[in-house]
Each structure stands twice: as structure tokens, then as C-alpha cells.
Length: 120
Image (cartoon, rainbow, N blue to C red; front, top):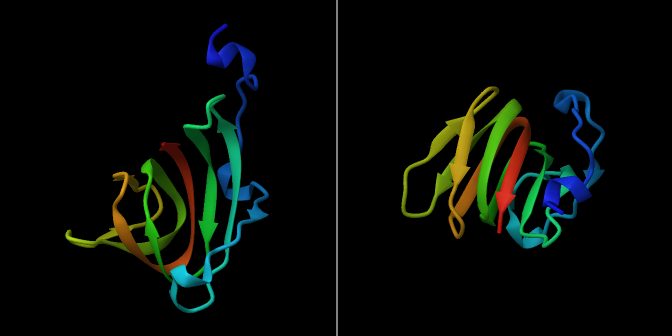
């Protein structure tokens, strides 16, 4: 059996309206503000090394160490600074790729919602 045949059948989700669940944010990651993170895993591989889902963060500044990720911003705006690299802006319709191990600082200007695919 292939991974797809034993997993959830194909489906669609309207990302802007999807209900998300609270995801604890390590207080050590918060640089400023009171950002709140919510999300929902829509699919995960049997070995747990890949996941697809929706993630949202309210305004504030946080740090993170990234996984190998492709995401598309559905709503909101943020500036992402990568240690050792230049910052870039993301907003609705933008796709971004983060490399595993990137140390980032996210300055979230407007509540940001993204659809993502992560590979571990």
C-alpha cells in the first residue's frame, strides 16, 4: 500500500475560515508583544517526517529555528529576518521557502495565516 491509499482521502479546506486550535508558544521565543499561535495539522505522513497544515500568529516579534518548509501566506503581513541573511516581507499570495536550521526572527505586523508543508 502506498502512503496515500492508507491515509485520509483527498479533501479541500477553505483556509481563511478554517477553525484552528491553540498551539503553545515557548515564552523564550517571544521578543516583544503578546503573540498567540494557533494551527491545525491537515495531514501527516505515517513516519511523522512530513506535515501539511494551517498556522496563524497574531502581531508581535518571535524567534524560531526553522524546519524545511514551503508556505503560502493567506492573510496578514510579516517581516522575516534570517540570521546571516537579509530580511524579506511576506503578505497575501506570497510563497516562501525556509531552510532547515534557519534561525529566524518574525516581526508580525498583521495577524498572519499561512498554509504550509514541512519536511523533517
